[in-house]
Image (tube, helix red, strand yellow):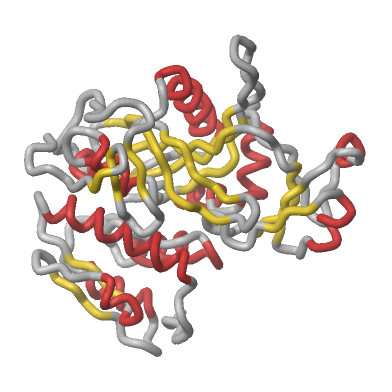
Length: 337
């Protein structure tokens, strides 16, 4: 694989840059850090505290990653699932003997493919939207009168290339061989992240995702959620981990849809939507929302219960990493621990 010369999609560039900046800052507080930087994003990063290796266009990207990480103790990859990029990067570094802080190859393979994720969730009894492909339409007749369907790539990242349609026939006409089709379900879009490090696994505060369904874009997040929603999110994500191949490691994000109902009545159905076997954009808000250093938990340098610094629904962030607390700019405090 060689670095592409065309422009990086704006949404991926904004979210990728925000995640990388946040992760580098946290890692640099307790370790020496080296990162390979795509020359198209060089202006996004102004780090004096780390060793930045600029990627060389038209040379094999993974070879450059391996060379840069050769004398490092550990590697953390921030990459999308598109075209198998994340799984391939992890496999190439591991083949070179580099310890990549990520899940097993089987976990990555299933989590990076939304069709395989759907099959794993249904087999494990985890609530998940009915999912079909052009060649697998079992149970579709029960949804013939359903109003609202979405089509998205099996290996898509975030809201990339999601399309919505009114009827099932229209959706299947638009779906390609690499797409899945699902009913458009009601609920609150929520994300909960898991940190699986050397001292065990711990869930971070669940947060709401701001998804614009008219243009299918991720517009940021807000959190932490109230206690009841926290419990529901963590319970569903725990079931999802159990249904996946072993073993989980590193940062893993779970996209959920939590059912809502009228005040005083039981909420609707909760669903596991996707599993992201990598750092997610929520990290930019979570790292400022809690006490301590999230990256340090990966390496056993911090442990114990996660403590929030702010009340429910008070911390908000944009896809490009701007974080506010009740509308005021928020920066990582020196005494966050």
